[in-house]
Image (cartoon, rainbow, N blue to C red; front, side):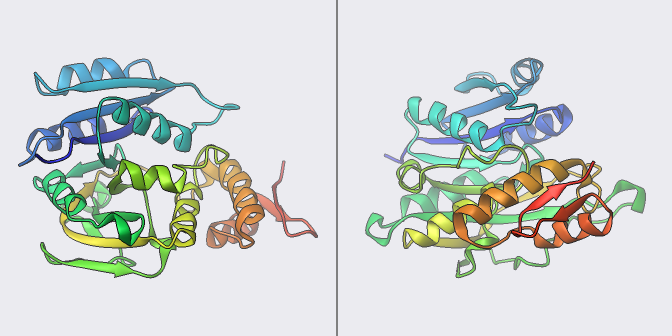
Length: 275
């Protein structure tokens, strides 16, 4: 008997994107045993899910408030995982709400999770995510991220650079994520919580695997570059990360923010937002 598998997604707004993801989950060649949706400061999410989730699915809802006025992405993922484990899930697939899974994503992740050897240490699996272009550019196919290879359907590649871990689409066993300590809830809002997990994976002697056959499409939404709407989150989370790990993440964004007059660097190296 295959292990019980849960799909976990966290949501604030983006209700049409959530409907798109749910439509993708309906098309899966292997349906998830549990679907967990965590609403972050959004009372409308339950209604969206109840209106779009397939009848008869085991759907679990959870909700979490903002923390100091910011969306608690790390804590929301931990809450979703805890809800899934309480529902008996041993295998976990975490999808960003913007991601529409390919028809075989759940089956492929489940197959690979079932083949892992626990003696090899913790493992995180990342499927490919292709990005929808801005619709104002006219009809175009989704674009693959330049830092990530497009793999064949049966290909698996060990990745030494753990900074390439991202939580847009990943899978792991519940035991492996627990061994890593889950997501550090000291990161609040956007940025660095993924990179922190990658560092703990490396420290634990674990492995990051890119896998083919578990693709997803990231639905387009407006997003400034650099992401100035997240400047406060990024500064606070970068400072926290540097305290823990001794080096600075997201330096490209931080330097762009500095050039825009949004942030500055103190003599001790810390970044601060400017009024």
